[in-house]
Length: 179
Image (cartoon, rainbow, N blue to C red; front, side, top):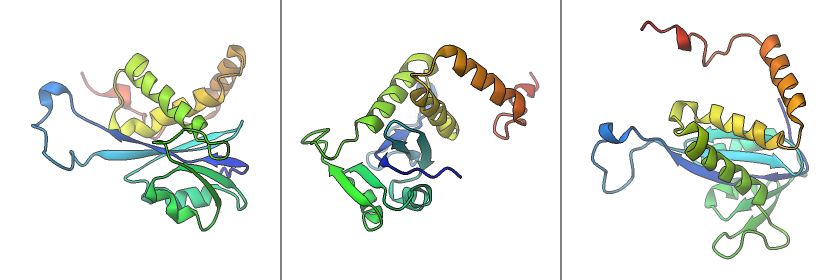
């Protein structure tokens, strides 16, 4: 299990998964469709990124506590869901209605990740399916972490991992469906 130390950033992005327009039922006046998911990212400054998907921000608290070393300083937004980790870690909070960085608290690395993920959804992915949101988030985290690594090293790493891992539990048999 990877445990992060140093400076971690834990804002989240709420994603809604929706069916195609022709299949979409009429909009509900309040509450949405019940498919909201919170994508939480923990990023080390100049280090690794760990994304995870939860039903709500508050559901992520035990996962965050299991992944961070004691003494870690967290930067987070003002969302009430992060109050549960304030007792265990030093917290720096930023109110995004006032600023994105105030000299102490800064969530720009996490916001950069979410921005790149949104652009990927609009650009080369075109659609991110709810059951596979974590896989898309992990790919984007890898891209974000390896963006300053040369292309040859990235290809060698991906090829090595592909050749030395077993079949994927999520995608195995995906292409073997009868046509």
